[in-house]
Amino acid sequence: MQHPAVPDLAHTHARPVHWLATATAMAALVAAAGLLEPGPATATTAAASGGAPAAVRPAPDAATATYPLECGGRPAKVAQRASGDLDGDGNPETVAVVHCEAGSGTPPHAVYVLTHAKDGPDARVVATLVESSRQKNVTDLAVRDGAVTATLLGYSSPEVPSCCPDEREDVSWRWEGGSFVRSAHADARGV
Image 1 (cartoon, helix red, strand yellow):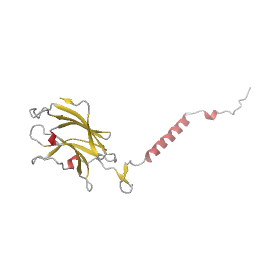
Image 2 (cartoon, helix red, strand yellow; image 1 turned 60 degrees about the vertical axis):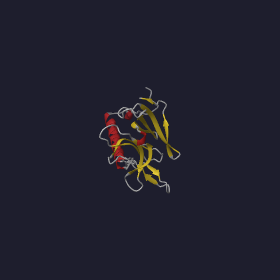
Image 3 (tube, one colour; image 1 turned 90 degrees about the vertical axis):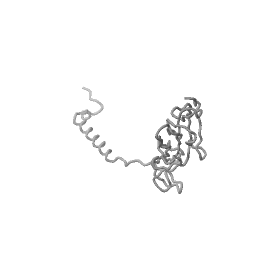
Image 4 (cartoon, one colour; image 1 turned 120 degrees about the horizontal axis):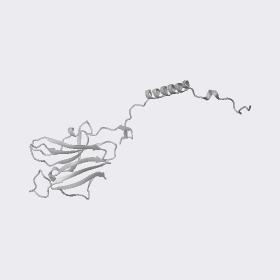
């Protein structure tokens, strides 16, 4: 009888007790990892003064802003809002579509960009993208990849009823060189 060159490795055959011990050790390791999880993450940006990290604030609340919209004693109403970082500072801005509260008809919209007031929680208007005097209605407002996009519905003449705009233009605004630059998309057309 020939003897193997290595000793008998009978002790290396797994038995149920070995699998049970391994499973128990793994369960204890997973449980310990769950107890040691890190706290919640907080995004920060470098502050302009001294480069110290500053906490990112939530997007401004459109309901707290005072809008430069003359409504003849009626309240202004926020019809749409969208938020995102438009100027690349790490803090989100809010874009609000606002119109005067009207009893009937379709009042024209204005589009404003909001940021936080320097010394308080309220929002303040920092830019006007569409004036209400342009007689536009705004739909499909969105903020994506640092740009504001919207569809502007308008009127080809004063004879067109305010309920039924007959012009449509898809536009976007992007922060460039210290101001918002508007661009119209190629599919601007009549409705």
